[in-house]
Image (cartoon, rainbow, N blue to C red; front, side, top):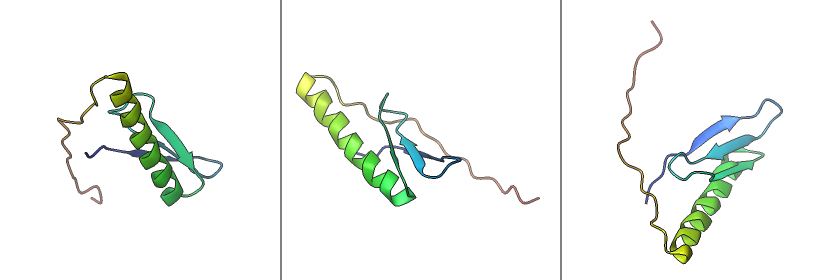
Length: 72
Protein backbone atom coordinates (compact mmCIF):
# COMPACT_ATOMS: atom_id res chain seq x y z
CA UNK A 1 0.00 0.00 0.00
CA UNK A 2 1.08 3.56 -0.61
CA UNK A 3 0.14 6.57 1.47
CA UNK A 4 0.91 10.25 1.12
CA UNK A 5 3.00 11.56 4.00
CA UNK A 6 3.04 15.27 4.75
CA UNK A 7 6.27 16.49 6.36
CA UNK A 8 6.41 19.85 8.10
CA UNK A 9 9.60 21.32 9.46
CA UNK A 10 9.21 22.67 12.98
CA UNK A 11 10.50 26.20 13.68
CA UNK A 12 12.60 24.93 16.58
CA UNK A 13 13.99 21.98 14.58
CA UNK A 14 12.77 18.52 13.74
CA UNK A 15 9.89 17.36 11.58
CA UNK A 16 6.26 16.41 12.05
CA UNK A 17 4.91 13.70 9.72
CA UNK A 18 1.26 12.88 9.18
CA UNK A 19 -0.79 10.68 6.88
CA UNK A 20 -4.01 12.41 5.77
CA UNK A 21 -5.68 9.14 4.72
CA UNK A 22 -5.17 7.69 8.23
CA UNK A 23 -6.80 10.04 10.75
CA UNK A 24 -4.61 10.55 13.80
CA UNK A 25 -1.57 8.87 12.25
CA UNK A 26 1.12 11.37 13.21
CA UNK A 27 4.76 11.05 14.21
CA UNK A 28 7.89 13.15 14.45
CA UNK A 29 11.65 13.02 14.28
CA UNK A 30 14.73 15.16 14.73
CA UNK A 31 15.66 14.66 11.06
CA UNK A 32 13.68 14.13 7.89
CA UNK A 33 14.82 10.50 7.62
CA UNK A 34 13.99 9.82 11.27
CA UNK A 35 10.51 11.31 10.85
CA UNK A 36 9.92 9.15 7.76
CA UNK A 37 11.11 6.01 9.57
CA UNK A 38 8.86 6.83 12.52
CA UNK A 39 5.79 7.49 10.36
CA UNK A 40 6.39 4.23 8.49
CA UNK A 41 6.23 2.41 11.83
CA UNK A 42 3.12 4.39 12.83
CA UNK A 43 1.41 3.43 9.55
CA UNK A 44 2.21 -0.25 10.13
CA UNK A 45 0.79 -0.09 13.67
CA UNK A 46 -2.31 1.79 12.46
CA UNK A 47 -3.03 -0.90 9.87
CA UNK A 48 -2.33 -3.65 12.39
CA UNK A 49 -4.84 -2.07 14.81
CA UNK A 50 -7.47 -1.77 12.04
CA UNK A 51 -7.12 -5.46 11.21
CA UNK A 52 -7.18 -6.53 14.88
CA UNK A 53 -10.39 -4.57 15.42
CA UNK A 54 -11.96 -5.98 12.25
CA UNK A 55 -12.15 -2.52 10.72
CA UNK A 56 -11.40 -1.90 7.05
CA UNK A 57 -7.91 -0.63 6.27
CA UNK A 58 -8.25 2.86 4.75
CA UNK A 59 -6.95 3.19 1.23
CA UNK A 60 -5.85 6.35 -0.44
CA UNK A 61 -7.42 7.18 -3.75
CA UNK A 62 -8.30 10.13 -5.87
CA UNK A 63 -5.02 11.98 -5.41
CA UNK A 64 -3.95 14.14 -8.30
CA UNK A 65 -0.81 16.25 -8.45
CA UNK A 66 -0.27 19.32 -10.58
CA UNK A 67 3.18 20.66 -11.27
CA UNK A 68 3.67 24.30 -12.22
CA UNK A 69 6.64 26.50 -13.02
CA UNK A 70 6.67 29.18 -10.36
CA UNK A 71 9.94 30.80 -11.41
CA UNK A 72 8.33 33.37 -13.70
